Image (cartoon, rainbow, N blue to C red; front, top):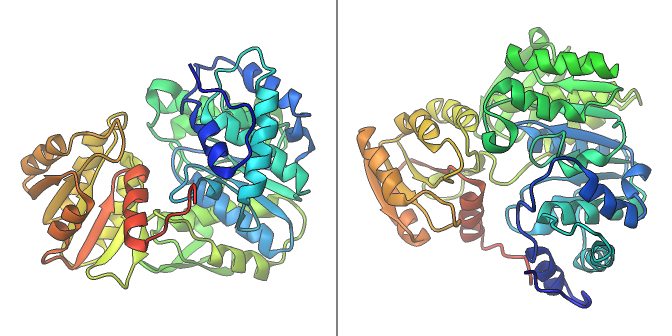
Length: 429
């Protein structure tokens, strides 16, 4: 039974209200539950121009690239993303600025009043946040809202938006299989539910089995499918400080590290071109260059040893991290923690050969895999393995005789370490 609040009057109370809902909510078979809530709020999603982004990996980066380029080009741009690292208000931004605590509190109260009138009130935290987001973007008269789907697409509550300006599929891989299905085709079918006509941009490198599903959906809805042309890409350089590349005779530079970020940026470029509004190349390039996301192969060069912090939690993400790590010749250690609902055994098999030693960590989430269990996997992989439940101990062990430290395996864990490393702590202040 949820604790009912009579009225939300402060930011801490708005967070208390949000936490009164479960993370998953009741199971969803259609969008009627969230549509009913939205209707009581005046259906704000119908007054938005949206770019809708779904995908297994890369959707956060692509969302950030698109939003930053639009802002740089002079458009008032909303960005809705998930999850957050330090402050939940990271998830709702306009032109790079978090929603204020006052606005978050006021709109949470509007949602609370509407939610109390709903027959089915088994909402998830994500649904409540999405409602706040839609209200905020309409209230602030955004020119465009870049909306990152949560899980999947067809049954994700963000999918109540009408036909978007562009639907974007960033990648297809095996993740959230209990919800989306256990094959790439099933997952592609779920994610391609955001395609409703207009334009669809699908990233290069999506498996053909999944691409066939996306093509079929485009044919059914009359959507124009665009795929970045990798023959037009030349990567000039790629390292921990980012990448420089040429695409269709235009030069770009991004700060987020990993060669996969060039593909993410290409996807964003094709979306921006598909909008047909004549965005200046210089503005697009400047937006891509300033786009950054915390805890996505984030580089800390001033720490001793230097650190790469990454929230990637599935095999696809670990492959991207491995590529970055093996390109660096220094000896590396790791601090790794993972969630039990992910394919952590495969992910560890991919990343373990990069390290001479690893410290395994838990305690950052209720469903974190036991650090002892992870350490046993590490030992069997032939690396020096330790386990702990304490951040300071993990850093002390891992930093000893290390030239480069990788911290990763879960965004929840990455968030805890980032707060510790930077001293940032905003939520509920």
